Length: 141
Image: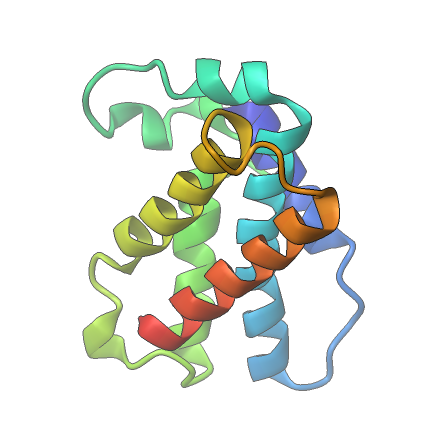
């Protein structure tokens, strides 16, 4: 889990500076999903292992699951969603539970890409699918 968090943080750290707070928040949200998908595709064994955890959400906030910045993948997603609310891109009344919707969609694509029928996609097609899923989430939440 900590490796996934580090990959997601690296994706965010690679973002160019943005003068517009809303554009920066949108980019950070996209980077969370892109990093998650990159981790799944580059480290499928670790990705699979990361989700063989206890049947509840206690691990989602565990210190051992945090990356270098001190946040877990779930916490990174939550912070990115909070940024969308702060900048007005996500109405506050739609924020509760949004992390479960976003996580479900991106995780589903990740599993399809590494273990399912999409595992044969060309890397460009896989990247396009990831971009489209993240766009869909952004429009839907």
